[in-house]
Length: 244
Length: 304
Image (cartoon, rainbow over all chains, first blue to last red; front, side, top):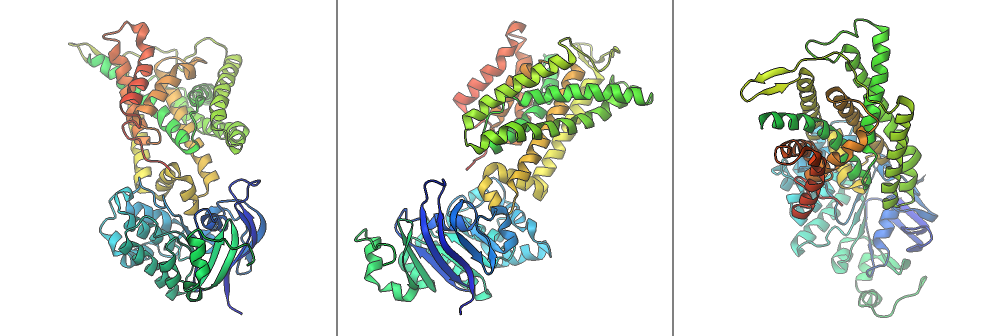
């Protein structure tokens, strides 16, 4: 049996309780791997990670982290559960400096804040010489690095990333995704939403495809890479029905 | 001219403290709180009650501090009234604003704040009467700063300015040096990202109300000390405080502090060219001018 870090079971969720966007969605994320969620626009990918993070109400179904039930967790308690979430946009505080953003994220680090801060700056050298600059002045790629550095501050076991490569130049996008991959080497688990299908499938271990708020296909990322159905969904061709 | 400028700075100090609290609440909870100025009244009147109480308890406290008309009892009352006003603000939020907020109706929040302002104002009138009151009946002579031109300042006014500047410095140090200050600014900029970063939003809302209420109480006492205490302090100050907030840019605490002085000075200098009856229109003109020329105010921060 694989070691499951996150088990989403039959979740129905949406911004408003009466109008669900996700219908009976289930995914399993194996510890220490990258799991990617792909799907056309409006498939409910971001909704899924937001529901896991407690930012949207789950109206039915269960979300388990190991054996802990974290369904409808309060977002500010995620860190205490060892979960971090990197939103797609507006994921840093623009009016604070880079150093202040990091200190805010390190607020909950109990052991040695200064040492952890230094570690993060070694990991993200691009931030180190800009500590006193306003975060709003960073480039798109640098913002993503800061957002990820903030997520990593409290050493989470599971990181939820919502389209970290969106809006980035190809090189920066590749760097961000490679960094996500590298994080699994230290045992961190990554759940990634991505629009860049080819890049995401090359990088991920496991892949889930959503469309119209439902599970479509899932499997090993390498298997799906050559799958013609995947292309169909993305090219707006025939849609697979749930369970197919 | 210099006298008007000085008077403007002193009025500005009161407006700054009121506007700093208002801007935090407005930015975080996304509504124009027209009942904020009534918190100044609550502060002024609760200090009046505590002042009488402390004077009765200890004759030592009833003695004036140096040249000031302010007594030890009033100084102590100021601290107590800050606490009471802060708690009142939290109670108003729990009883009224939170319920409206949970239904997601921003405009209803504004109307609720109008209603609350009327209730507070009239309740104060009912309890304390409509006649004006003073913290001290003693006459305090103004100090002559200069004879030509004649510039007068009362020791109370200097104390007001001094304490306000000290509070501004404390706020600044807090916002720019402590993680609590960062958290406060983070919540104002992007509440949902703040939550994701482990900040308890409900707790921060309480903190902002307490802080806003405390600053308003201080402003109310200072206003009462330099003018007189009436149930309509809130009505008279609501527009200048809003003008200060808008000049500074909603959400910017620094902007609000500066905006208070800008509005105070502008309203007092305007008396030199306009008949004094037109003085209350100055904040209106400032609001219109800022919205036309620089809608985000001087320091309007980006928000999500």
